[in-house]
Length: 65
Image (cartoon, rainbow, N blue to C red; front, top):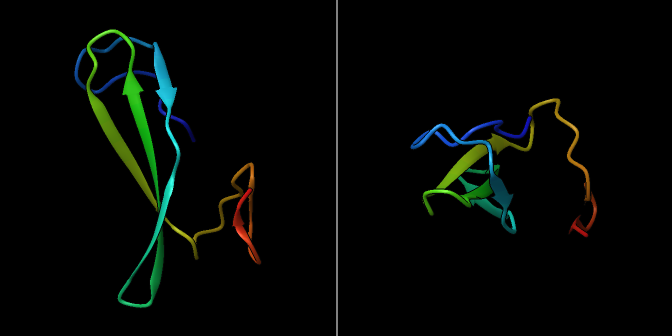
């Protein structure tokens, strides 16, 4: 589910930064941060923890490894 290109410049040279986990209205949001190595823009992709998505490096009990 990683983005394949930058929404600002369209290039495919992206670096994934450390994700953030927050609770909003009793929902757990997992925010993935990406930085484009071409134009320098940073953008986010947000998922709700309750969605049926598997995240590499994440486990239910301890959060991010």
